[in-house]
Length: 245
Picture (cartoon, helix red, strand yellow):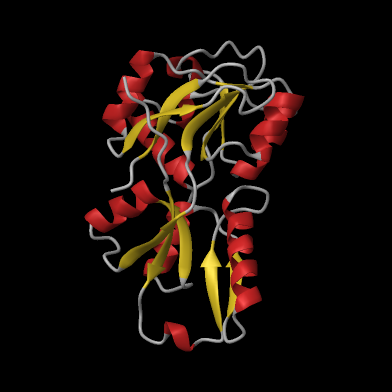
């Protein structure tokens, strides 16, 4: 079977009259401490070093879904989003004026499990304490699709946390959750702390789960988080990422 790593993170532009006449333009990103916000800050820092006519300003947000809705409502000028979610908006005619500007990095559907959680497959999440992601994030939106495919509701878990991705390492390290779902690029500091300092593991999905996810998330493709991405992660992790369309 052929596995691919795919660039899935895009800056999306909503084109409307008068945008470039502003002294400032705004990039909506994600929560502080996660991935999108420092990415937006770095992009703005680079732009502002070389342009003295406009000022780029990075905004925090709840994530990809929030950013796409905000672009459509003209709340800001640019937003960071998973490309598969952007394509869903475009194909469903929710936001036909969105345009991809550039790809930034790879992302993978990642399930982080606490030590001694005894979670080895998707069905083991049932009855556990699970962070399903905050409303407005791509992680939450896509895990909601998985929950629907499995016939789950929030009541299917001992407790369904809805914390932002930037809180995942604290939830794991403090023993509050057995697992957390995050659509994210690797390596990153949240997983580094949870895995290397707190003994968490990336879930190695069995073939049966991979096939279910392919049917549930048709815009995703086979991907691998390489072995030794984190010091205590000795094995490659088979999962799914996003295709560029």
